[in-house]
Structure formats: C-alpha cells, structure tokens
Length: 279
Ligand code: DGL
Image 1: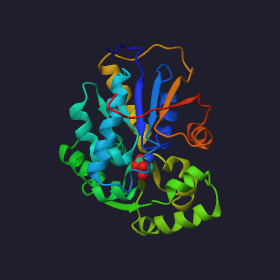
Image 2 (image 1 turned 60 degrees about the vertical axis):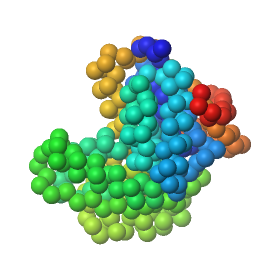
Image 3 (image 1 turned 135 degrees about the horizontal axis):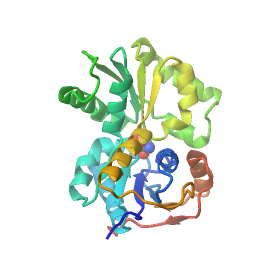
C-alpha cells in the first residue's frame, strides 16, 4: 500500500538518473526519493528494445515492491523503448522523460528547428520525432510553429566523459564540436539533452552552441510528476530540504559513490546492492 508520504521511485541504467534526482530534490523538497541504478547492466544505450524492456520491467517491479507512489523513468533509452510496457504493468503512475522534454522543446523553439542528442538506442528509436509529431497533431503546444523539423545526433562518448568528470576537459570540447557540428549547421534554436548523463556536460554543449536553449529531460519529467502529485492529492509533507535519497544499485563499484555524488551535487548515503529477481 502507498500513501502520500511514500517515496517517489526513480530509476536509470546507472548514475545518469541522479541528475534528475538533483532536480527532484530541489523542485519537490518535501518528497522522499528511492533511487535504483541498474549499474550491473549499464549501458542500456547500445542494447535492443527487447532487452531494455525486460530490464526496465524489473526495475519498475523492484520500485513498486518498495511501495513507491509514482515512478520516474530517468533514462531516455528506457523511456524511448519501454515506457508503454512498464506503464501497462504498473498500478501507479509512471512518468517517462521523452514526452515532457518534447513538450518543452516545442514551447521553446521559435524557428521550429529542434535538435535531439542521446544514445544510439534513443536516436534510432525516433521516440522524440514521434513524440513531437504527436504533440503537434494534438496541437497541445507549439501553437505558433507551423512546421517543425527534428535533427538528431547520437553522442555515445558523452556518457563516459560525464562519468569521468571531464566536464571542461579539452577532449570533451573536441568531441562536442564534432558531434554537434551537424546541429550547428542545421541552425537549431533548441536542443533536447536526450540522455540523463548529458546535463553534466551542459556547459561545454552550451559553449559549442551558444544561442541554443538546452532542455533537461529529467527536469521536465519532474514538472510532470509534480502535476500528477497535485492532481491526485498525493504530495508528501516531509520537512523541506532534508534530501532523503535512498539508493539501490545492482552492482557497486569502488568509484560509484564518488561519481554518484558528482551527479547528485550533494553527499549520498550508503547505496545498497540488490539483485533484481522480481521483488
Ligand atoms: N542515462 C541513459 C539515458 O538517459 C544513458 C546511459 C545508458 O546508455 O545506459 O539514456
């Protein structure tokens, strides 16, 4: 059974989702958070839809068995490939990152040229293209935009650079220039950071694309989660700024805490290692 004081469950393939938790604790300071990083099976970004769906179901199942009241899929790859599947098995609301970020991109763009960067899996799934088309068709957003074009680039090396802490390293800058050159040429005015690792590299991305609005997909998902909590009257009332994050991982490496705290922006308590066996 869940109640208003139950935690919000967040999962990602690894540490990337902690950039979403960082936003979550600031935007919803009265909530408790239960985080699961599937660190034994990261990355999801180069795996098939069937595998990512199977892994995502296990992650959601784990969170539901720990009585969370809402799940945020803080992984673009899992949201792109498995959101429908996990929503089907879940008795509680499950919020992905794709539609909220697509919605924000449509709100921000003035010239209708939207860039999306993400893992190979996210880009190949065309989940953002479909979400933007769907939103346009439903005419929910982008009221002034007649014609929207989406330009996508996979940026797989951004994940290890972010985890290495090379946020301002010349190598990161070089790789960013290479990856983002086609988007610069396409004259995008809005860029979706379509991987929850990428906010860690936001400064270098912004340096390469100085006049482009960056959309943080995790932050947009938290906005949607907040609306659901309000609508369903299930917001918690813990004292603000307690930053209660209960962390579970499927593999604990020696560097996990150090990397995780960098992504989170504040100290993380002990992460508990678990086996995802359906409970
Ligand atoms: N954080 C994941 C995402 O948002 C990327 C890492 C991975 O490939 O598992 O897609």
